[in-house]
Image (cartoon, rainbow, N blue to C red; front, side, top):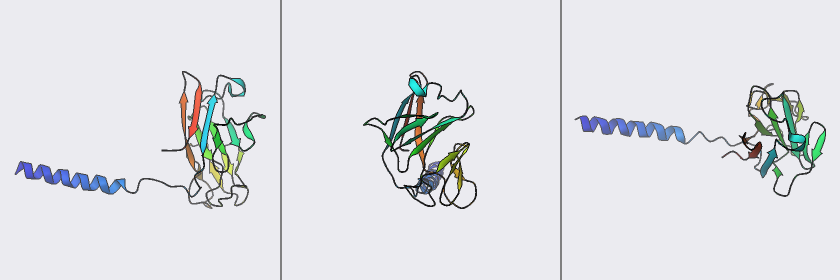
Length: 166
């Protein structure tokens, strides 16, 4: 009797767990595009681009990587996403990276611009909160957040990697 009960509980648990697993993968409306950035925060214009310092962001697009008014060309291995990528940090949150394509308008040639803590679409004027680490729309025009990329920071080497979410 105890064996049968154990099997019934195991069967119920496996059904419940498998039912939850099928709908947890989110797919952005923004088309996939190659994304690969490798930033050494110990060298050149990237010195100080670490979470312990003040709020800062860099933008990567077809003309290079832009930070504090300085532009560095992309290397052959680097790619910037669909419409460009913003990497944002502040003293309270770790790195966050988003594609600059508005998921409501989907215009690759009209990327969002950065205004303090928001990415703003120049077409529909939706504002996306990049400060929170979520990239969520704030005006209710868009129904989904900015496409987010994975960031990995190695404090020992000072290297920041930005790539696709897995």
